[in-house]
Amino acid sequence: MAETREFKAEPPEGIDPLGASSEGASLYELIREDIIEGRLAANERLVVTDLARRHGTSTNPVREALQLLRGEGFVTFLPNRGARVRPIDQDFVRDIYEIGVLIEPALTRWFVSMATDEDIAELERLQGLIEENNFADTFRHSELDTAFHTVMYQRHYNRHAAELWWKHREVLRAVSRRFNFTLARRAAIIREHRELIAHVKAGNADEAAELIARHVEGSGRHVLEHMRARNAARAG
Image (cartoon, rainbow, N blue to C red; front, side, top):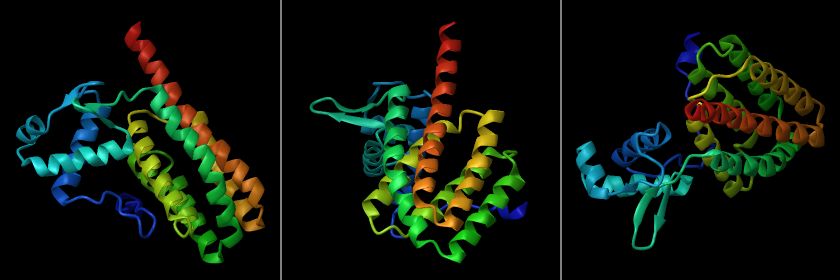
């Protein structure tokens, strides 16, 4: 299992995952985690000097981090009101995954038409590692699952679409890691990945596109169901 423990998914070639200094990138991770975990409340004002003091840094890396978070939708900037935490609610998650349902079928259809034997072998290798891990380590699963889908999108000619996919996937990964996979969702992921590989092998572009749309929607709905259950538990 050493190979899966050491595995780290990377964005498609040519796409900078953050585009910030190392200090700005580190702050981005910390502030995003605080937003997702609720340590920074929805609509809370984010004061650059306060954040710099809290994290023991200068203001420039904080500004970098806030701009990155703005690009992902975690932070909003309002005239004369500065930066505020965007509510990470069900509407936010729905909007993100619905965009994926729209763009990923197009990316997948193109991939099927261009897939090589090496691409298929890599999908099968990653799927083998996913099944070997069998959701025992959810972080490892997330990295391998991201790599699986990156194989299909990493060479697409439309780099804007590929970058949008990557950024939105990273958002959903960050939000969803608080929740466990249900047994039904685990089975669906394994089954749909295997079906997808079969469609790629057979050159069934339309069938693969339809499947990936269901796959993305299923992932989004899984997160929403967990969010609804958590909110109901808090309200009750």
